[in-house]
Length: 154
Image 1 (cartoon, helix red, strand yellow):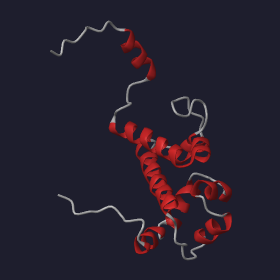
Image 2: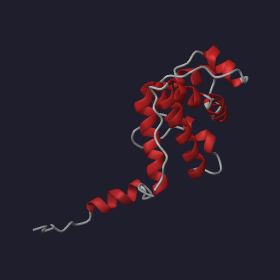
Image 3: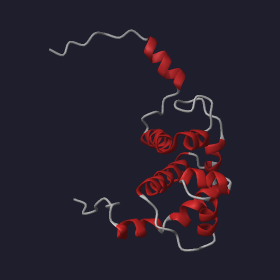
Image 4: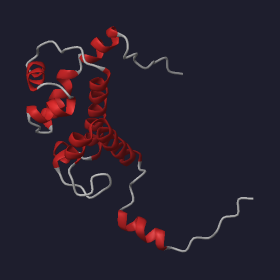
């Protein structure tokens, strides 16, 4: 049994400790070829704060919302590198027809929808990693057209 506990984001010590991840997350976003403005918008920080953190200046103490964003971005980055080994860092800027993107890019969804958008992207990628969505949309549509027998659960 694991003894790992969730951080208490109401505690300053936990927020300060977790805020130290900011420069690493900025490096991830650099790999995605995001501008400092896009990075700032995604993290809900000022461009100046992102720039300073990228240069090694001590990270500011982030709030719970911003720490949640760091966590989601880290998970998205990890999942992209697991799923798309040839060009993982290009994926956020590629238009995607899957739900919830419906033709938009994952980056656009994350920028316009905030934490719910980040969470949707993370869930989609985690589902793909688990094999939950490994069947093509065409195969799913074909399976839906097959006759289904009624199940008697009594």
